[in-house]
Image 1 (cartoon, helix red, strand yellow):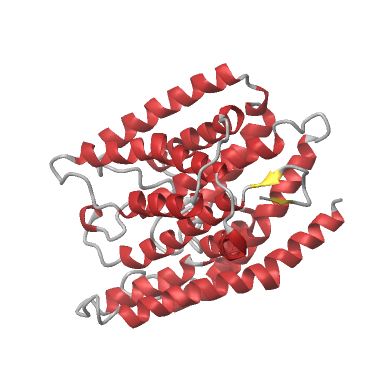
Image 2: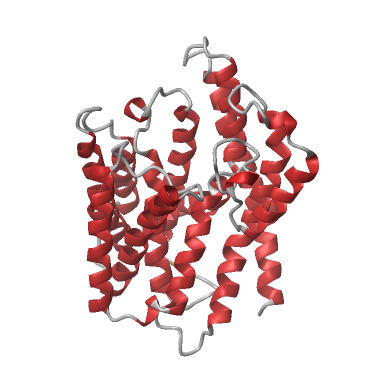
Amino acid sequence: MQQTDLSTKPHYQILDGLRGVAAIIVVIFHIFEIHSTSHLDQIINHGYLAVDFFFLLSGFVIGYAYDDRWDKLSIGGFFKRRIQRLQPMVVLGMIIGAACFYFSDSPLFPAIHEVPVWKLLLVMLIGCTLLPVSLSWDIRGWQEMHPLNGPGWSLFFEYLANIFYALGLRKLSNRALSVLVLIAAGVLIHYTVTSKTGDIVGGWSLTPEQLRVGFTRVSFPFLAGLLLSRTARIGRFKNAFLWCSLLLTLFLAFPRVGDKDTLWMNGLYESLTIIFIFPLIIFLGASGSIKGARESRICKFLGGLSYPIYITHYPFIYIYSGWVVENRDATLLETLPYSLLTFAASVTVGYLSLKLYDEPVRAWLKKKWK
């Protein structure tokens, strides 16, 4: 563990590393997603559950970092810290999305060339605030609340969870929080086993059904992470980063459970993974210690890269997906150079964004708001 400049509390480097592992799996999942014919045959089949892992990790870290600070921390101060951490990359992600927008013009997005520049720029400015756009302003055609950078939906719900935490959740007793966790778990299981697709995919649109998915996805993980931060007795677990990384990869990459006639089986798998496996991984990760300077550097690199690559990679996925649709006759092997190029671009832009933009801007905001 290492000390941070925000607190005298130990910082969980292994959890940072695991967040990076999950973010890279998300990128790989999105690259392969366009090659599937349905939810039943996706490669890295449950890669989208990394978002639910992020929500749980967020609840744990926020509870750990802030629960005992409210005698010295104001609500305004809390929101300044969260804006300082999250908003710079939100803005950059939208700018990158706008810069890449017309390059994704393809049969997959046939109306892109008809979008005027003024409308693109207006959607970008709205996206920089993270306020969702209505369906009438969907300039891409996928009904996304952030059509320039789809993953922005998860940051929208992250902000909502932060608001609920600051305004009320932090005041709840462990017993009251436990009741909410149990209710949220029941809602999660009910949705996944009754879903028409047999999974928890969704949350990115301003339709009633998609908003239901979004609130379902954030509620249990964030609440459970918060409760875990309060109640877990952190122990000692050897080689925690290695084993937790393997466990996380296994459950995110596990093949689809069941078939089109037994969709509930996959839904049950996903809900139980979120309810039991993800908290276990975070508990074990928090119980471990860094093994040597090399593992420390790996966790630091992955942790630093995790958020920038997550919030900047999707514009390149739009372009790659459009190319794949234009070249449907190409085999998966033939598309490999382009998929590797997309992955490399995502990692490179994420890392450069971290070093040349995110870290300097956050340092400036920290100094300005100190």
